[in-house]
Image 1 (cartoon, rainbow, N blue to C red):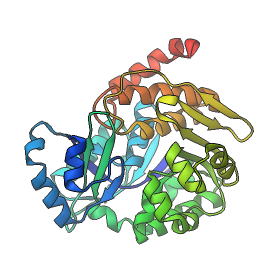
Image 2 (image 1 turned 90 degrees about the vertical axis):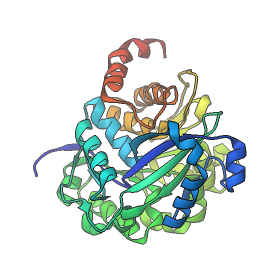
Image 3 (image 1 turned 120 degrees about the horizontal axis):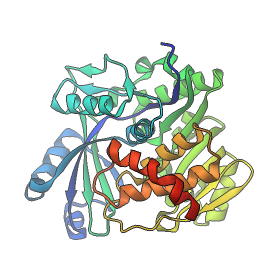
Image 4 (image 1 turned 45 degrees about the vertical axis):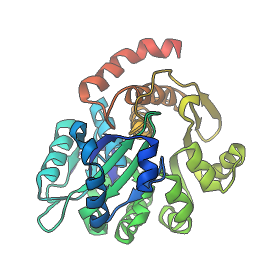
Length: 338
């Protein structure tokens, strides 16, 4: 393998089913709004029984946080590699076909007859907030043995998700990837993924991520959880001690981008939000695409904000390649007024 990649990613391969629900539905099912919950097979089947009346208008899409970002980079024209595992089932074939269509490279021996492809029930309330209910399936066995070292050392960045801390074998894989990257002078980027993961697995995350990372992505709540504070300024100072550069997304208020020297405030690109699923992943993907293609952090932040706005104004956790190419075509004109 001699191919050069902008970003190497590893994470869960999840097939999403989006379902529109009410706040009352979530309360009746005992589900905390806006969080990510892990389901075992029994809980997943029980939840599907509850959701029978909602499934008629549901939509199946490929997902997974890192995969969404990696796919976004590829569809903008970047070069990416994704390590994941799927079952030898319909969902697995559906998932790998989506990776191929997007132009993402992946190892070809990642379908397992003894496993079930992971799934995620994405519950969307009328305020466009999403609540994730994930069944990991074969993803729970993702390990250091699945790492493609040559793809890592031939990349500009590796991109990890904090969700990997939830599985002991995935956590070990993340540590090994970080070590390979550091030895090979490849930059390490991480998404904090979920505030509950940050607060409940703090020590494991510190072990997984080491003393420093090159680039960190978080939203406001995740940043506050990381710093164990309710003050954003304190959280920013805390992140500066750990991440050489970072991004904090602030929803409708825009984002903050720290380039290692200066903290930039990025205004939001105003749209009517119908669904926040995948917005943070698109932001990370667009940002990584921009900085691996010669853009500075301020420009990358603006481009990522514009790209994420396209996701929240549409349904689904990803855009298709046509829409992403339209974003690229529109960007020069949009950038003049941003």
